[in-house]
Length: 560
Image 1: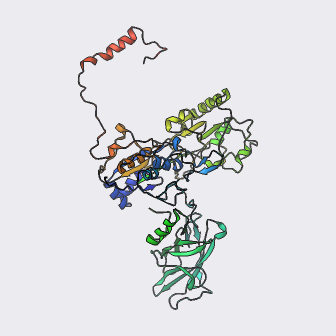
Image 2 (image 1 turned 180 degrees about the horizontal axis):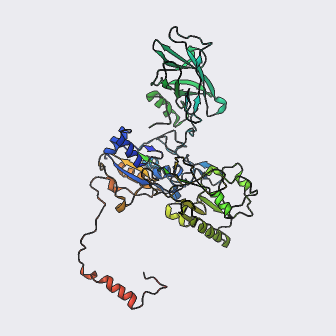
Image 3 (image 1 turned 30 degrees about the horizontal axis):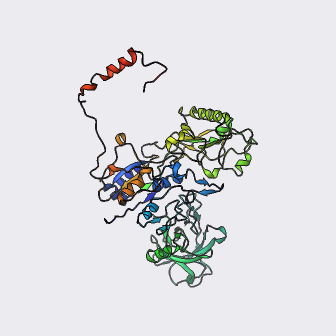
C-alpha cells in the first residue's frame, strides 16, 4: 500500500490576500512571504454570511452552510435549546478528520472551532472551541493582560499601574537604585478567582533593569523574573482551584524607573482542554504550556465599513415590527427583547441579539398561508427598493425568500423567512438608533459577514485566502477567476482529501480544485479566428427567419 503523506492546515481569522501580499512585500511577514513564493495562492469565496460561525464548518466539512447547519452563532436544537456553533453538537456534517479516521488516518486538531466534544475515537482534539474573540476561550483561567505606567490606549485588558518606592518587602537584594513596587490585578474568567499580585522593580549601576512578579511582598514568593525585551520562564501557579500556566514579558522599562510596560500571557490550565485529557499533559511536558493565541486559510475577509444599518428601526418605521411601548430601545441587544414585541401587531420579528443575525427575518404568520406570502412579498419589496439618501445607492444587495436563499447555499430550519444581504460597505448596527442609516463619523471601521461575499476594495475584501504549497502543487499560481470562477471555501476539504488519497466527508459538497496541481490545466481558450463549420454557417440567419418570419416567436411565448 502506498504510504500516505501528511497535510497541515493553518487557519487565520479574517485574513485577506491583498493585505497579506502588501505586508509580505513590505518585509513585515518574512515567513509568510516565503510561503507565498512557493505556493499556489488564491482568494476564496466564503459562504454567506461571510463570518466565523458558518465558514469554519464549511472549510472542515466541505458542506454548504445549509447542510452543516451552523448558520449563526447559536444553533436551535430539536429540544429547543440554543447551543454554540463553536461546538460539535449542532454540526450536521462529518469533519475531514472524522472522514480520515474512517479510512485509517489519525488526526490532531488544534484550536479549531466546533470540534469539542470530540467525535473521534482515536485522534486528538486540543482546545476545540476556538472562540474568535479575545477572552472567548472557555478553557482559559484568565485572559492575557498588559500593565503600563502610560496608558494611551483604551482597552479592558490594559491596566494602568503606578510605580512607587517599595515598602514592607522581604528578601530584597542590597545595592542598586531604591526598589520600586506596584500591584497588578489578575482578572480571572470566574470573577471570584481574580487575584492581585505584587511587582518589584530592581536595578544595578546602570539603572532599573529587572522586574519580578510575586504572590506576596516577599521575593521568595516570586512567580516570574524577567529583563527588558525578554520573556520570563513559565510558572505553574494555583489559580481558582486548578493549576494555571503563566509568563511575563517586559516590553519597556526606563532606567530611571518612570516608565514600565509589562505583558502577562493568557493563563491556561494544565488539564481539561483536550480530548483525550492525557494528551494535553503529555504536550505540556514535551513542548511546554499550551497557549490559545499562536501564530493558511482564512474563514472570511474584512473590508471597509462606511455606513451602519439599523434593521430594527427600518422594520419599525415601515410598520413590520411593533413594540409594546414605542419609547423602548429599538435593538435586539436589549434585555428581554421578546417581551418587548407586540406580537398581535407585528408582521415580522427578529431573534434576540445573542444570535447576531438581524439579516435573518422571521414572519409572524402561519407558513403557507396567504397572509404569510403577502408579508413576505411586501417585506422583500421594501428591502429591495431601500435607497440610502446620502449615497443614492441601494442598501440591500439581495433580499431573498427562504425558498430562493438556496441559491447562496442556505436551507434548513435555522434559516429565516427572509434573508437580507447588504451592499458592500454597509454593516448591521447594534445600538438603539432613531435613524435607519448612519455613517461612521470619520472613524476607520472594517467588518464582514452581512454584506455581499464578493465585495472588494483596493486592500479590503470579503473573500478569504487559500494558500497551498507542497509536492505537485503549482508555484506562484493564482486561479484566473474570469475564466474558472473563484475557489470556494467549500472546495478546501475535497482538495485536501484528494491530496491524502481518501474519500471526502460524507456530507461534502465542494469540488477538488484540480487546477492547483501541476500538469492539470483547466483553462481553455476559444479559437480565434472562428473555424468554419459548414452545417451551422448560416444557422443564425435561418433561425431568426424561422422564428420571426413564420411567426413562431410570439410576444407571449419564449421558445425552448
